[in-house]
Structures are given as C-alpha cells and as structure tokens.
Length: 65
Image (cartoon, rainbow, N blue to C red):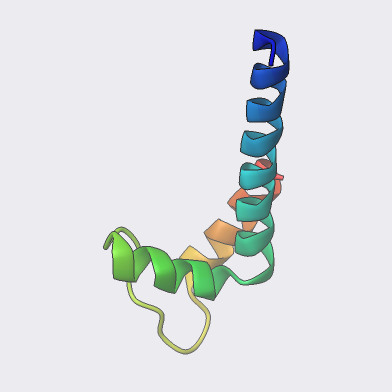
C-alpha cells in the first residue's frame, strides 16, 4: 500500500469518527453528557429539566458536523 493511500484511508476514518461524534451530540446531547460525566468527570451529571450543558453540546455538534 502506498503512503498516499494510507494517509487517505486514515483521513477518511478520522472524518467519519468526528462526524459520528457530532451526530451523537446533536441528536442525543444528554446521553453524550452522561457518558462524559461517567468516564471523565468533565460535565456535570444529567438532571431532569433544561440544562445549559446539553444545549451547548448540541450547538457545538453543529460545528463538528
């Protein structure tokens, strides 16, 4: 496999990963927030009602996509 083809495959993989992360945060922001809270402790825990973190992750996902 040539070096150019390897770089191309790697770029496609990274682009798909970023797009899937953006879609996950766009369509299920509270699920993403709970995942990040449980594994990394960066976001606060998910509580019922409107939360600004879920809104911010949804807005940032539009940038990721």
